[in-house]
Length: 192
Figure 1 (cartoon, rainbow, N blue to C red):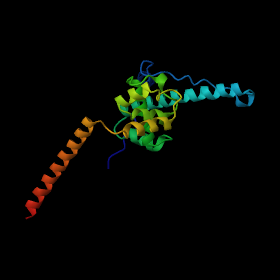
Figure 2 (cartoon, one colour):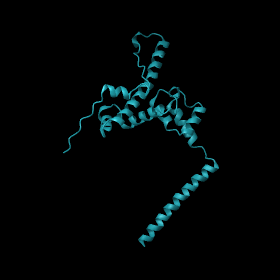
Figure 3 (spheres, rainbow, N blue to C red):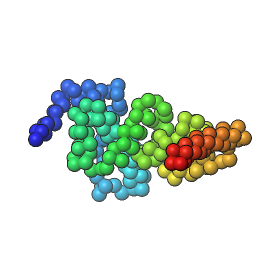
Figure 4 (cartoon, rainbow, N blue to C red):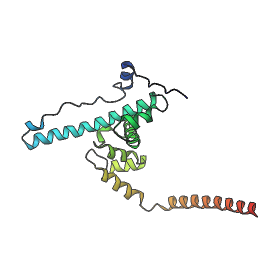
């Protein structure tokens, strides 16, 4: 029976290399004011906005940590870590990594992103042309909601394609059906 390999411990030097300032922004994550000491609406609003903004930095940082872990941990350890050591699913980990990669590659400036991870993930599912259109229309903005990007996707993806696009789609479908018909004919001749 194979012996389970002990997880590799990453040194402080390796961790600082993984999380080098050039690789990702350092989170602010400053302590919030005690809510029992706040009295005015603006004081509450200020602290809530600050915490909300820091939540974006946190999920981006988590995404970067996940990317680094996936690259550096021995085979099988990454999935095991998600399954047993983290408070979220593999699906959530994939979404967080997608958003972190998206920001890392500069496909969209981080200042244009909303502070909600699921909303940011939905942006990553847009094509480059759709992102450009969403930016031009003002759909992608820091105050957007998940529903905004979902409505945008429904609208642009259900529009009637132009004649050239429709022709290509129909030709592709015809070619697929012709290939399938040839397979069926061949199979029928083999049976006979």
